[in-house]
Length: 198
Length: 264
Image 1 (cartoon, each protein chain N blue to C red):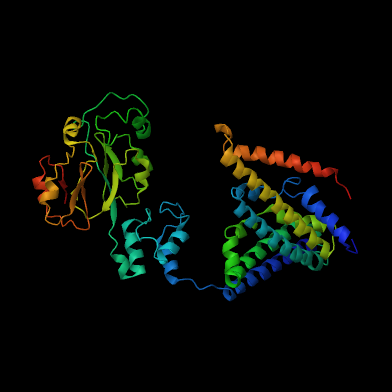
Image 2 (cartoon, chains in turn cyan, brown):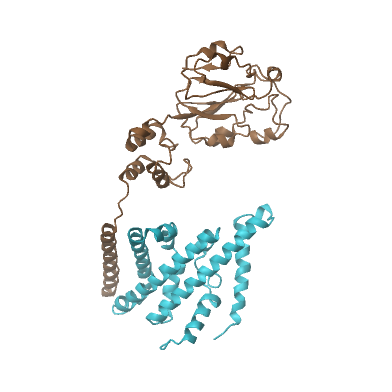
């Protein structure tokens, strides 16, 4: 991907958001997907927080990989190095937001520290390194993947609210079990995008 | 090979050091000044985030106390000493908060209150109350299966001869037991109150007499004799306004049923 035309970016976006949706096709980031999808407001908040952190993390991990790990022949340390980088980054962003943009800090609330242990963030950074993306495309890939996460968690939160409000669920399926089933059906739905190819 | 291990070790170690240093610098640069009373209150609170106060965690409760939205004695774990410490942190105006305790508005123990039928069901107040409003003739009283005992985080309630009793030394007045009682016989009163009405029966006097020997018949003698106007009879049961009660004890002498307890 040397030259980024509008067409390639669009194909890239469709691929990351729909076809290889991070939650529903790759099954990464399932914890926040189930944990914070009870209300659509909080789901969107979580999605925004993930987008923000994924974008930043892709920039920083790209730098660490290119200028620290490759020169030292330490590519095999990418996983542990990225965990370190992401954890420190999230802490730093949290501190900075608390001081500089308290409104955003309060809006993101508990989700920011939760992202520290979100495997989707680490997974995206590792994937873009392993695919050999350049700086711009790894950033775009991360943002699009995060938007895919936001889309999935938002749709799922709407499904869950509707289940809670209108459906008469058998007692054994109430709460978490029916959510798992709903997630599986939603995942089937996203499988349909596999037919798209560019 | 040793060079490789050393290189990996040093690379990660130095990265960790850099990030740690950057974080500590950022911690100072971006330090947000919070109300220093919040930190002090947090130090008093247990930090277990149990939610017994009704807030999401100890930090949220501390925020609410600092903002003046929550009373100082809501933490059921920090107990009275903790409440006093928090009150002293918050300053003089908060010290006037009277510590509260739960009080069971029923004294119909097995030998005093009559029964409608013999109950063989689950050991649960809610289950028992669903069967014709409970097995007691009085449909307002304590059923004695101890749903409040199970809920109490302080182990301050016990069942004695079929009626719940509150241990005032342990009770912190958190009010969790209020929701546990299907009959609603528990009320929260000031800890230093000495005159107590231990009956919730709203039936007319004649029916109350049949049901229980310790029932308030709503005769209004206490209301008429109270020099402070602190007692009123509402729905055939007397209610004490503890902001007016001076614990003179006249009502306890005048009550024809000897119901108004005067405990020291």
